[in-house]
Image (cartoon, rainbow, N blue to C red; front, side):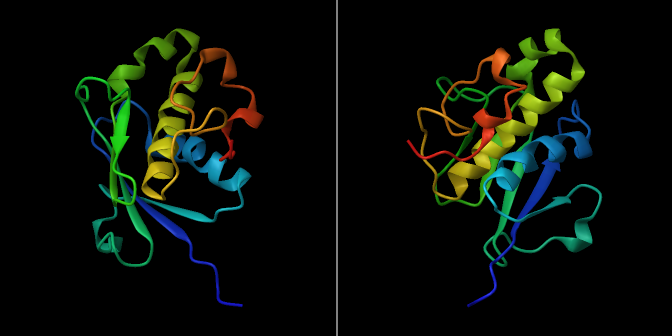
Length: 148
């Protein structure tokens, strides 16, 4: 049996409101729940480790300032593409629940967009649903890659 490829994600945390490790801890969770091995690289601190996206299952996650265009929610990714973007500014309302909740929703939003890069469409439940509710943040059952 061929070795399973590890999904490598190069994170460009340009916005910086969520520390890299907090972002990764939250973003990694749905992949772990689904048995998908991941490696997360801090692209701003370790530029020598970077590889072209198309090689070695590399994907990019850009955490950036500002807001996406209309009807794009908190981020976007082109299915089958290699670079996704999330905009933490659009998730500021979660800060009322505390910094841990805010960090988690930003990480989960990143994982959601990476899911699109791997070809996953929106679903009715699980991480790939189009909208998250604050009361779901502590329910780990809601955060895996679940097929409808």
